Length: 578
Image (cartoon, rainbow, N blue to C red; front, side):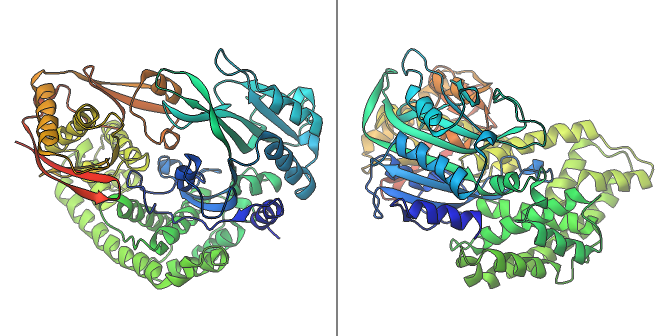
């Protein structure tokens, strides 16, 4: 029995109901492209809605994160991963949560207690030191020296206001070295394997911390990480979860994993993620926007690295990998078997398109190769034709030409920032074009978001947006059709701010600093540790990846063209800039 099955069986024995994994494409959350954490589909129930399965839940959740897509290829990063989690919705609390975690790790997984260490909340002037969690761990057998405390890493919050609470993180000593007597959370040999959040407080708008009427438990354990840790692997791709996939790529390519690690990891990771996106019942196909854009990037990057390994990409290589992945996962996620034909069609169709694109790219390169390759040309070849910079450099070297690598890298970082915006909680829409008009529209969405809080309801929040060169679309939570007066007041307020020539600037800060600044930061947990906050005068502060104008007077006249229902409790505004 593998870790996933043991986890479910254990918590079912403790009265939990095994709930099915939510789809990778959220069904009722237009603000994000993919489910990025085990708790994300359960947010409404953690906020108080009754769950049809009751108050004790356990699952393994399909998750996709693409904010660090360019780090795939190292030993530990994955775009698709599975999160094991158990929850209490107003039922049990710290004692049971900690005791069962310890029991599962030491009795079921047989981890020696001396290889475990924990952190608990250190306390501040509003929430005291978590002595209860400390004492529970101590009584279970964790030594005093293996219990550390922090403030930053042991407090969870849903946002600037709302549910929050302390947490305890569990660490495993992954090293052949002698186990240190004193646990240091900064020592990389200690790897975090589990986090238990004690959601017991509510933070009010004036910053007060109050007790919640119902206390919740929210836990998360990364499946891939824990398997690698328990098997003593420092390279996740050499664990039992990946060995058959890597072996197949070795067979297809006729090459060894050793010396070709990066390309084989990228192919293995991206093919697995592509299978789960293409197999989702949302019917995602490769395209140039939203989830389809991510799917296209994954497939094309896998193809590039297959070519690098000298795999014949016109063969059935991708089908062989897909078949293996489906066999591995269909026991847990039946939709990947049911939608197998759609997966293979997506991969084969994209391979044909990409090969044609590469040919076009070569022709484009020939047109530009009468002189050194500037940054814009190099990036155009990358972004439009899928040319990795290495290929452009190689072709240029053959002709004795230079490539503006520094300029390309700068342009590439700007592109990454836009990609992170998509995966961090906003629809990509037309932003990839990064044109002047799209930049104006994007800044206007921030003004519209701020205006609706004044003219309609202070609790209005953006639920999604889509921008192209002709218009903007903005979705927000609202329980009624806007009146003509509300629409006019909103439009007038946005134009007032535009006419006031408000300066626009950005600051990088930690998530905690962003929260303290009062910035609009819905779904804060989806963002990286360092975030970018855009300030528009004193009317708007919002987490975002850009791009933006430098002054509101650059935007032009804002006009709302339509207001309509989008879904239950969500309204949609369409607007243009004249």
